[in-house]
Length: 448
Ligand code: URP
Ligand code: ZN
Ligand code: ZN
Image 1 (cartoon, rainbow, N blue to C red):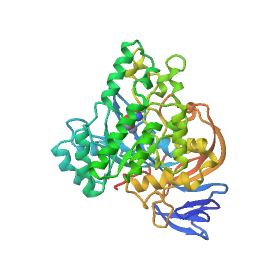
Image 2: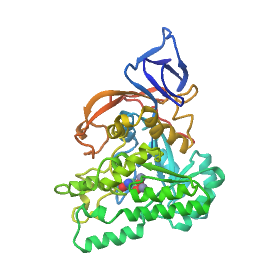
Image 3: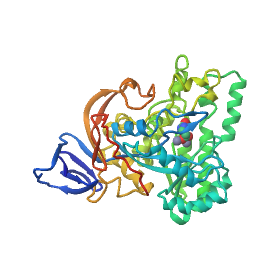
Image 4: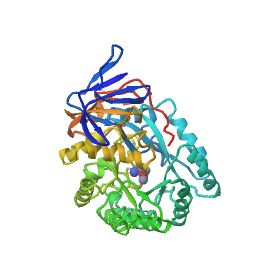
């Protein structure tokens, strides 16, 4: 057995100073444990022991705009583990003309043999037709309980299709997430910016103003209401969108909110950085105003936000982002974050959130929403041995040159932060130590 001693466990019943034992990939005992001669004892003095953090929104090995994300499942999950994450829920994406079952197989193959963390898949439905509908029960059987639709990009589906998808996933309790941006408006506003000679990254947020998100959030809420289904608004970035969700919730709807550290810290002034540097922050939805950041932070503090994910979608600045020099619409959309989510959350909120809240936002809530609880997201006897031993006292500086993510920059460069994952166990195997991944690939596919 591996026995973690002297730490403060963050359990579903609150914090407890006690020990935890793992064997054969499971947590086998929580409480006072006397180690035997064959047991490995891990000292967690001064640390919190969390159920492994779950990142419910990543894009690894994804083709976008004629290029492929800088991180695949090897580097992406190694970086996740280095930062304290033990499970990622990535997006298997059904391209036009493909079936959802084939899309799942494609993504399972991408991850096979490469996973330092556990991996589950949402299905991004991009081609809604009779075959897709027919395949949903088999997809559910294969362990997929959560879905995403886009209202923007060439992967977008129509409002009517979203309504049909909500209906189709109801029988098995599926949850639908939505990329809420009005794609038609985005195209219109991009053309307007270009026509006015605005070709720089600073035009990116102007082409996707808060109204573009809020209108789409409002529409998604009404679609959820029409279908009488819970819905999940992913990567929420605006106060205006938040207000739409508050309104829907006030009328009794279940609307889950996901946001990401970048929307809680970085504002749109980053798009005006010298030269082409602003391209590093081109993600969609874009970074927003300080007032949006404050509104979202308050929503995290009050418990209105359900989950914190990264939307990790990394592209190298030098070789990929620069494709958009002279035309900001050609900058591949996305930013890296998979390695830094836990520490950035603690950097942003410090003691304003307690370990139970960090656990809820980054582990237990995503596990519950995505059908993995209490197998994951909880320190309980019988749960999977996905465990993050977090030392809140280590001080360090985030540097792209020292990170595991396979990308040439981080939006959090130079930030002085406190806290680091001292030991990260995935299925009871050490996947990272002091911010460095081990050579192990203990991650498995999570059939939900
Ligand atoms: O810019 C982003 N976020 N790219 C990834 C795809 C998405 O919209 O989630
Ligand atoms: Zn999205
Ligand atoms: Zn995304």
